[in-house]
Image (cartoon, rainbow, N blue to C red):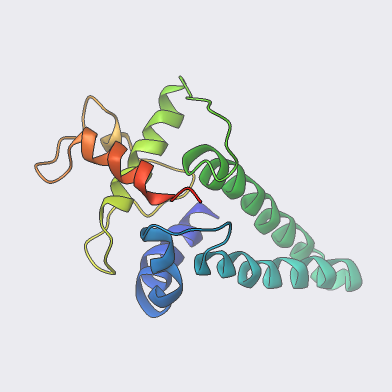
Length: 156
């Protein structure tokens, strides 16, 4: 699923449907953003696959496809929305090296607020190049990443 999500994020969210996704790259007030519509869109093939897999024995494999899409969606919400963007406030700061790399990669992704020029399109996989000790960019300073993350969610 991560490969499908990466391609969808890069070519659809930062492509054809940027008008929905750009809400996720700009500050907003409120609970929901237009980008949240993708969750509804992705739930349709998940639900359809599960129902077809249950209903038709010859399509039983679709049950597992639907379960996989659903499981990925659950992990996405937990890691992306809760851990990275803290849409549910928790104050936790992960010490796990991989989780910190994933958060760093996503903050770097959000440094770009336009349709083009972004990097790090994965949701649950962050390549080793985003390790704090490895990633160096002239355009991205750690202080800028923190400021960008803090300003992304406007307090009401």
